[in-house]
Image (cartoon, rainbow, N blue to C red; front, side):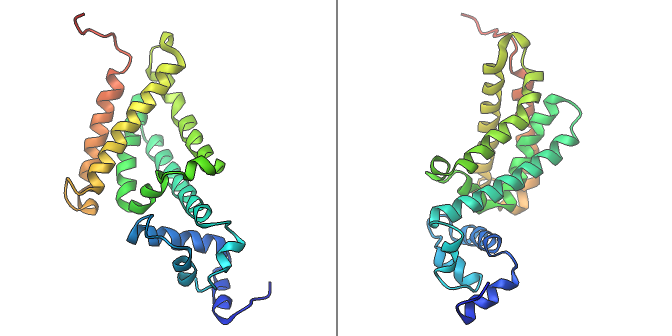
Length: 210
């Protein structure tokens, strides 16, 4: 492909401009957040002209969605690794909470991207990644909940598990426990313990006096 300018020629050392722009986007969001992100800065960091990103991405949100999808893929790989070392469905589900916290310490800005308003609404591939994550965990959830409670209970367990994991992530990134990178391992243990208690108790008969 012919290049239109000197700055743009340097970018093709990347081999894949779209992937390079996604990497730059993740770096920028880590530094300044989603609101501070600009396509122009992503172009500058990849040494291309300001208009070059629009050959691959329709607009700012499309580039942000592509970066969010990359974070989702990385998270899936992290969760898969955590689940393969667990010895039971209860432990597999609990391990996900811990891996979520550890990932947040590494991909801080990426979590802002995953939950940025509007991105999932308008980008089907990003929404599909959420369904893939649920599909990854559902078999374990079905093994945990009593059979008579069915799919609704299994999905409810995953919702509760997500709330626990995201809650610990929010506290971690807000600095409640200290500097996130320094305390992530400890907080991951706490999150795993809380998730294990949730999973172990889910579906048991309600003994609360009426």
